[in-house]
Length: 147
Image (cartoon, rainbow, N blue to C red):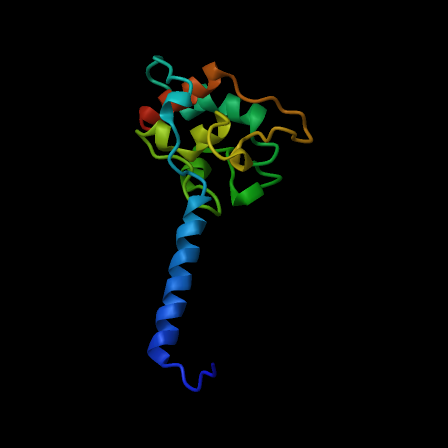
């Protein structure tokens, strides 16, 4: 069978279908995808949490070697509240008031896509994963407004 003419409308329809399919599958792998919140450590019941007094030391100890002033993997810095709220190349990493939906929490809790786990399983610096208590504090801080 020989095709002599393909209508521009058919070509545009085909291209639109391909682009739509690629966009849907790109979203499937995007960080921050919905995860089972029951797999997250519970938020701490400590009240009045702030970045400076409660969260900065955790992030300085476990995160800023790769996400600090000297190095910014993914264009993400975790060494100041302003930088955390700004996010990185993939966008914002937390939603104040919604810790279970925040990429920061799912990443440090090692829930969801293993490629997004922080610190990574086999990191060169041998930084251990955050403890459930640390993750609970981060969750409570975010749920309290991430201030």
